Image 1: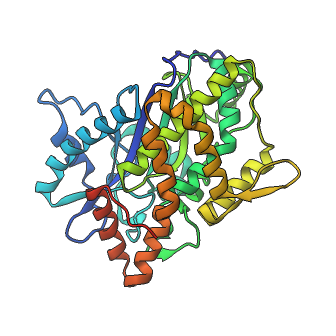
Image 2: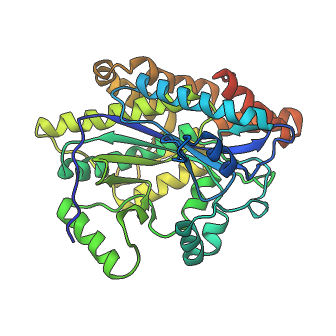
Length: 379
């Protein structure tokens, strides 16, 4: 099966942020996204180009255009969110940016009326019916399908760092799960999820996609939901494992890390260097450690089982990417990654609020305050 790859300009950036619609008075989820999307539609009835529907009617996705820098992506997101707020606030609604809602139950929410979603729910059943979660996806442009495979193979080893930094879903149905990202485990209940397999080249990717189509597992490449994947239509590599974070500052910090890391790998390939990869068992074990322990984890760094603290690995990666981030104009945003080490992830902060107040509603209020002010409190 041939899969056409549409090359992108090098290191272009696109960001997709899933967010919840909530009742501003109760803090609970509100299945009113169709109403919000209708209000944002053009007079001719065409949908808003940067606010999309999702599986659940209490969820929207805010997307950027093709951006040249993290700063441009932030301005794009800010402009669209301002439009969203102009529509939701008069309706007594708000948006909540977190991997999971801390207390609302998925069974109390409606699904979006759409033939594609109806077919998905019928095919996947319970795992899809309960998949009420919110994530951030980062697209970084690459110029060739071969580079998309090589970069995906290499960057997959760094995905646990992104997950630990972005983790924002410790609660499910008002109960502490003991995880920092229960969203990740919900996603893994779907087929074709988790770390991508190692692929030797684009031909092997095409062969795998063809086999999945022949087997009836997928109808399009979009139904492969790996934590990172080449996106042939966009000409990007797509990092898909992050929880939605409450502040744009955090979203943009990880955008800078994603863009800089992909560009760093691209430059190394241009110099004829090989990119290191880790065995599949290491990738899966490290993802579990990120889901369970977040930035307190020790990650496996080699096939013999050697480990290092997550925080040290993040500090080393930020230092390594510093020169690239300067070239890309996102050094300030990349430095904000280190601020997350000081404040803790959103999951850490949510747990602190619950410990101090005993109230999951207070957790929602804290998330809304962080989002409104784009500010988090240090440990």
